[in-house]
Length: 250
Ligand code: NDP
Ligand code: 8X3
Image 1 (cartoon, helix red, strand yellow):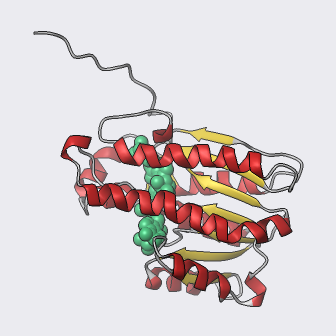
Image 2 (cartoon, protein in one colour; image 1 turned 60 degrees about the vertical axis):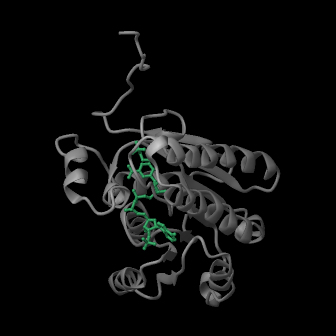
């Protein structure tokens, strides 16, 4: 099975790997993200017949609408939306966090995601398509410094279930993909460009790769039309759960 897939956040990490995975299987890919030069590189690598680049900021409603309205005819029949664009900013506790970073996560991971989903719903319903939302293990398992990031991902997981319920009878499939640790640019972005912090987090941990998640996305998207994968949680073997923390007197 092939078709047309729109992948948000295809300039790096999971989104870029998914663009390559779907294109290699014969899909047409609409690749989005803010970094135009990265999108152009992807088009150069894969081919303009297979990838259409749309540079826009997920926080800009008008830009999303304009980009979708301006899609070339041969990229309009979108079968799969992969809502991948997103970020975490900051690792400190809530009481030491920067409100503007919280707002940027909410505006990107929640508001941008629902805006593009709403814009594409008529097409996805007409195509009996699929929506694959990238949530996180942070949606379910809180950790110190996860505060707003985890909150945005809890929204994504719950929105996915709600969409699935509302889209009942339309043939549109909805999946929440919930990865743990994947080595991408995620931690460099989160730490404001601290490559050493990123290397320290992933070093020796044999984390999942962007290609692991891309493979999962392709698998979900190519299941038979009668089968809906509601949610998938993935972790590297090296990552698992810890207990509750307790404050003790003296
Ligand atoms: P990367 O930082 O490597 O990629 C993030 C992508 O999101 C980039 O393409 C970036 O594009 C895009 N993006 C961020 N902000 C915006 C914006 N305002 N407008 C448009 N695009 C934006 O990280 P990952 O690949 O790891 O992250 C992809 C998704 O996976 C995110 O939703 C993340 O929360 C989620 N995730 C990641 C995990 C991990 O451990 N890495 C685990 C679980 C979930 P550009 O900067 O060019 O705009
Ligand atoms: C990213 C995974 O554990 O860094 O969503 O929050 S984690």
